[in-house]
Image (tube, rainbow, N blue to C red; front, top):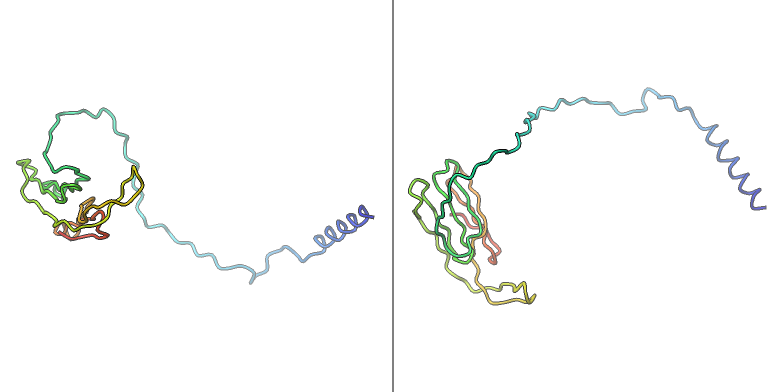
Length: 152
């Protein structure tokens, strides 16, 4: 009985598919196709670095916990984000000396002890990373533990 039911079901499925409507395309059956030319310029891939040569070592003294550095667009200034020093140093490229220091006033906050997985007393206003805008007139600095970004 079960085999008969399976055969009847198979019969109806095959005849239903064969007697379905035409598969030919009808004039109003499709959406119009709009061809758009890509205007984005293709940039050729860069050649891989090879034969990089280490010329000299130069050490600039910064505060403890320097997290990141960024150059301005002309490479005349280097800015060091000093996480634990709670400051940003501006170095002059020509002299390699600190030309300005932007210090943040410590505000009590909570940090996280990653070894013990628990909160600890810490400070806010710890600079982590930065970027420039307005033709290098504004340096935007992200602050660890302060939930904010400040312009300098």
